[in-house]
Image 1 (cartoon, helix red, strand yellow):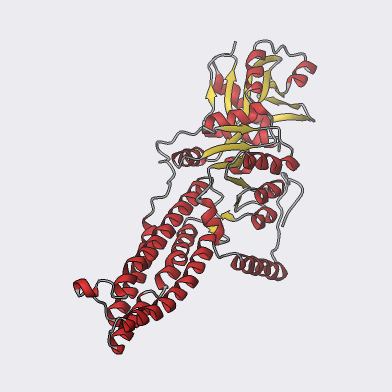
Image 2 (spheres, helix red, strand yellow):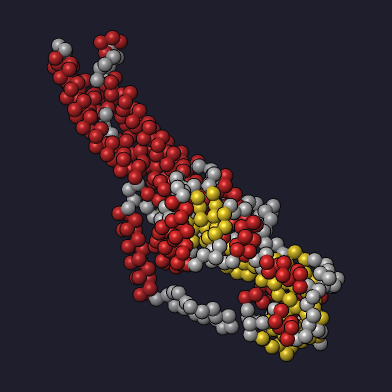
Length: 467
């Protein structure tokens, strides 16, 4: 279900009926069929072509081996023995298993960590990504405001905060809820507000413990005749830093400034660090103004900020990066991100995002955790490495075994292979390829920092006196 409004004052109950379940299953089936049609990776197609030609090599090689030994005077049974050995040992079993086994293990490893690769080409593309572009709101941030700074005027900061929180408890605005949460976390005693009055677009006024409390923007303060010069510089600095700075006054005198901003997700910093460890450049794409975007970027260590971008221009920004020769992965969650997800070399959707974004993307992060972006790319690199190792082993094995099976060393050294030994050798090669793919499970994936030692990037600061 998709709604178009926020209901803050009453509860809403929704029923997910049988018809909805049928639609959900049908959509899942369509996605599964679509994914199955694209599940063959480019590396697998290459291996399939190589296996096709290897079959011809086996047949032609067996025939030539028989003819060469027969014309050289070898007995017919012995010439046939060499020919059969060549056909058996060049059977492309290991080559055919080289990429599917690695992809199977890679997709399984991703599923255990909540990373869903919708097609095998997505795994291979993930290994070649050198630039990750992340949407800000809902991807790097929680999409919920949080108090970042509390600057009271005077020394009794807890008492002042309790008055402001009492007023905000009467409001249903998201910013008001953030201030109340901040006060509750600091153990501020609860006060009761009366004569509450909301001033649309400006703030609110109420009486708390016989004191008039005014909280809002500069326009409300001016209309109430309150001098804000004591905090004007701090308020402007916070606003320039990308925060929403709210002033409050008690009994006609300015009492402080409370700054709020969208909070970064708990694992956002760890995700950026993990991407940097893989040598990947990280950019943030947002429609927010530059100060707001740069604040989040500085907290998280993001390399490039692309701000003030209209929804319809996001895909164009991705195309610009691609024209610069970069392999780009786009991470988003909303309807506005879908064109950019489709434009990118690899589209990664947040699991809590819209259906359009999820259906457009190549990879879905079921846990909506930005750290899973680094995990997806690490799995892609590991899977591609195993694919190359398996292909190298399969091709190398055939290159070495073929001349031995053909009896090239038989006249000089008496070395020859029988069909039985060739069959065992061929089976052993397939086992080695499968075991090597299973070793991908030992891949070390990024893990979130210890909550006890990790610092929260949006921790609010309190100053004893903004005078």
